Image (tube, rainbow, N blue to C red):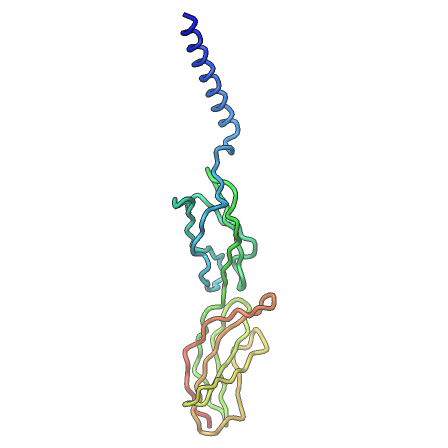
Length: 202
């Protein structure tokens, strides 16, 4: 009889402890969350093109080989809309907590430039392009057809989308390309070059 009492007391004690643990868990649901500091993040470093909207990196997050991408959120350290370098952290949400140890980054660069037909000038030409959004300056590169070395001119105004180049050889063909760029915190972020156009000087 005493043996059964001891067993019953043990079972009752176990039940009480279980109930207390459940109550504690319900009162502090954060205690059941899984830390993601050791998670592995892939992707998210691809360069993106500025268009005036916030940019969201495409990432995959795995913890112990389990995909938890839908259970994390991105915390931006820097602006994720303007041209420049974007830094961000990956943090847990829902049943996950903490953040991945590393800080990640990607670039936002100007859009590719669309070059208009260049105008012929006496021993020169005038290069033109359409405006590229984002507060950009422009680089015009040109070279004598059949040569490999490009020469560079830059615009000095955010509102100037054309540049005259003179003192070239007369009646010669020159290849021209243009791209937009912006300097942020001392770093140059350049868009893709326009399609090359050819002009013959007067």
